Image (cartoon, rainbow over all chains, first blue to last red; front, side, top):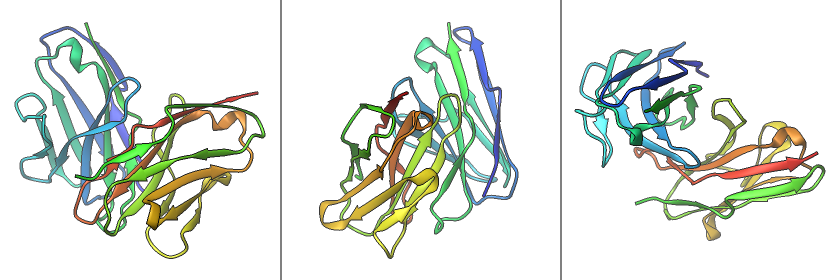
Length: 115
Length: 112
C-alpha cells in the first residue's frame, strides 16, 4: 500500500494568484496522478505526473495552467496558475504501485477556494 | 472511450436496510473493476476490486460486489447498512495501459 500526504489541505486564494500543492508518498511508486473533484461531481484526471519528464495532460488541461513536477518516485507538485473562481475545487494526488496491480491510492485532497 | 455510469445520485436508507448500488461500464474487453468509498472529510479508499476469477468479490466492512460480464455491470451490495456507511461511493474501471475512469458517484445517507 501507499500513504499519500498532501499540503495544503485547504486554502483560500485571491483571483489571479497561483498556488502549489505538494504530494508526498511514503513509498516509491510507479505512477502518480493529479485529479480534480468539483463539488458534487466525480473525479476528473488532470494529468499523469512522469518522473523526470513533462507530465501527460488530459484533454482540457494544459501545462501553462497546471504545471506539474515530479523530481523523484515519491514526490510531485501541482500548481494552479492564475486562479479564477472556476478553479475552486478539491485537488487530489493519487499513486499506483504498478500498472498491473491496478489499485490507486489517494491523498486527502487539497480544497481550494478562489475568491 | 470508456465510460462508467452509476444508477443513483443519492440513496437514502434506514439502518439495517439492504443496499445495492448499480454500476455499468461501456468497454467490452478485459477490465479491472473497483469500488471506492469517500467518508465525509476523508480520503478515497478502496472498498473492493475485481481482476479475475470468482465474479463475486468481498471487500471491507461487509461489502461485496458482483461482476456480470454479460451486463457490463459491477453492482455493490451490503445486506444491512449502518449509519457509519454514510458516504460517497464511486465505481471505477481500468483497462490495462489506460487510465482509470470513475463513475459520477452515489451519495448514500443512512438514517439512524
